[in-house]
Amino acid sequence: MKKNIIFLSFFTLIFICGIFYPIVNLLSKDKVKNLQNLTLEKAQTALITTIPYLNKAIQNSDDISLLANIESLANVPNITSCFILDKNSKVIIHNNINEWNTEKHTDIYNEAVMHRKEHI
Image (cartoon, rainbow, N blue to C red):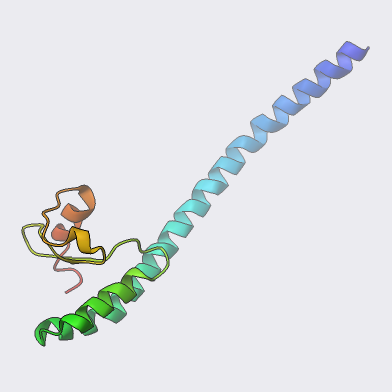
């Protein structure tokens, strides 16, 4: 009798886990997708509000204003780096000073060069 109860309890546990695992997995993927979209929207909003100031600083050759705007954009939550590239993937300005005047060819930099007209 005791063996049957243990077997039935184990079988019930496996059955419940088999039902709830796909449901939890689906819900967590949906939650991750929503958080990624929210993060992207926040970054785009911060970028859209900062671009006029960056363009004005570039046109006026105001290095201090340009650096301040880059730094403020990099301090937005969920934004880890902020940079300006030329068309050859050379970093002109980066929130990390060690990255200045270096050529970058990783995926994020290549994607930024590909979409350079999108946010100008």
